[in-house]
Image (cartoon, rainbow, N blue to C red; front, side, top):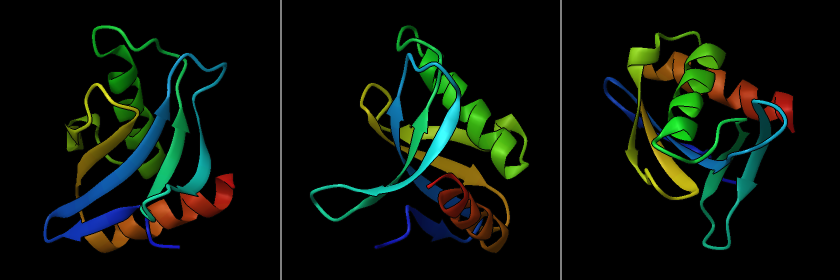
Length: 106
């Protein structure tokens, strides 16, 4: 299984499969799509209206990785279930934290 992220020199791109309108804000491990790409599976309580679910996802990721909310932004898939988030910070530290998240929640 491939990692659900791509490393850049000043951060990472994280691939997420988001389910809005859930009973809890949480991560559910790493899933592999039919095309072979891996995504971190996340659920948020927010509804997918006016960007509320996207904002909730950004906050959830920031809190889980210990980075400021301003360091997390959605760069692709704003209205889709599969999203790409850009997270600014030390790539090695972020990658380690995301791998731990995927193991912890599966």
